Amino acid sequence: MIRFENVGLRYGMGPEVLRDVSLHISPRSFQFLTGPSGAGKTSLLRLLFMTLKPTRGLITVFGKDIATISSKEMPLLRRRIGVVFQDFRLLDHMTTYQNVALPLRVRGKEEATYRAEVEELLHWVGLGERMHVLPPVLSGGEKQRAAIARALIDQPEILLADEPTGNVDPPLARRLLRLFGELNRSGTAVVIATHDLTLMDQINARRMILDQGRLDIYD
Amino acid sequence: MIDAARLKEQAFSAIGVLVARVRGGNGQAPIVPAGNVVGHALMIVIAIMTFLACLTIGAVSLVQSTAATWQSQISTEATIQIRPVEGEDMEALLAKASGIAQGFAGVKATRIIDRAATARLLEPWLGTGLDIDELPVPRLVVVTLDEAALPDFAAIRAALVKDVPGASFDDHRNWVDRLVSMARSTVLIGTAVLALVVAATVLTVIFATRGAMAGNGHIIEVLHFIGAEQKFVARQFERHFFWTALKGALCGGALAIAIFLMIAWWSSRNLATPEADQATALFGNFSIGSSGYTGVVLIILAVSVLTMITTRMTVIAHLRQVDRRDET
Image 1 (cartoon, rainbow over the protein chains, first blue to last red):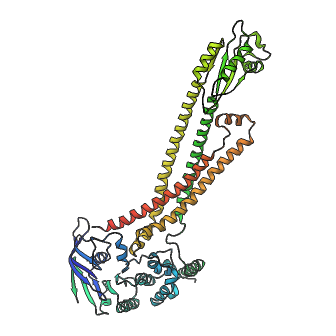
Image 2 (cartoon, helix red, strand yellow; image 1 turned 90 degrees about the horizontal axis):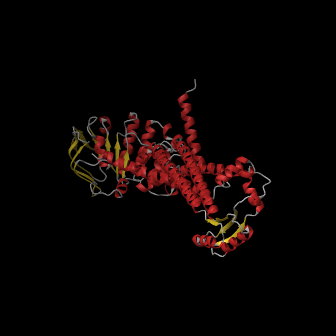
Image 3 (cartoon, one colour; image 1 turned 180 degrees about the vertical axis):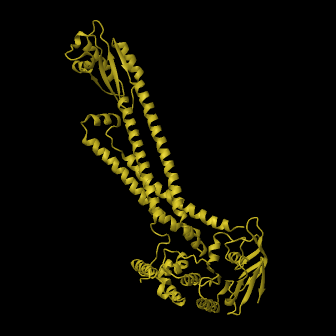
């Protein structure tokens, strides 16, 4: 699904933040990406989501070398990947429902074809009562769940989540993790970047540990 | 004690539900948020610049039509002047000169300025009660020319000099040439001013649009990251800013047209007054012709389209910047 071979990354003329990273994210897999703050977790996630280009090495996403993907192909590949940003990136002038429905809207779908689906997903993530509320009114946990719902609405083949439990209390973090587990069982590959060890202890999943730019994988 | 934060949250929640219901159920909110302070500022800037550009185009159109009127009025007439000659009958000479002139193709009519009219012409210098027969006053024949096919001035001049003693022919070419050159200079200056105003409008609209777009960077990025195609993102912003610009440009254009109409109304209401006579002498009837109104419509459309194009380019530049920023 996504494959890295000897990938290196540096910002400008600075030191390499990622060195010789090789990994393979297979379909239906579940993995945590962890490491100390500043280890390069977000950079690695951005490489996975193709918003960064590596300084060296080869990255293939859904069988395509990202160095040769045209700008027209890029949106089509991104649609197969769901992303939950650390800062949520919800649009404040749209209600929760409209934010979650946005990926379907940009794909040109008619609202009548997805309304029930969006409402069902919002109920599933526990935001059924908050679907007509604007994001500034939502709590951190509610924003987090809205961002997750937006990433899931088009049934992506892989979900990338950057610190998805960073803004929530432990019970909600466990609930969100169960949600990711259910999603994974339904066939979506999941990559969760976190430095929350207690969270990782709750699921027996592959761990990718970044330290000083190098990646160690524990299956 | 009232929990202010809770109250505020409930108010926001109620507004959200209300907005959603007003839009019809879950509804499709515009992807680009409607009217904010920056959007209104852009609309006002566009209205002001369109107003100034429309006023300039109206003024240039007025100057252009006035210059054309000056030119055509003076170039459609010529004058035969006959000086008194001993032993010759002036009236006979006038009739003969008039007849010769009429014989040429391109001469539409001739008109002999009679004694009374000649006396009136000289009144400012010689006073009233003048007996024109007592003085050796030259007499005039006004020749009206066909503007489409001007006669052979040299041939007329030669025929008159040959057959009418004391006759000379003034085709006004010197005056026409001077007026043409003055009219051209005036139109040129007007066009240069218009070009400057249009350039200022273009730059102001571009920078104001880019300023208004700057606050929407996060929306562009979110759309980009959830897989929206470049043309989809551009279309959302183009549509929004086109309407914003059109509203502003229509306000500015309408205000300019209102001013044109007010001036025309004032001019027609004061037809007989000295001020209006002075203005009419210089600018004709002071009304903006169809070219002026066409110019206003074109300016309105051009400003709206320019805003749309600037928006598209800003969106594309922002998307490129997002990708370039991510390059390492």
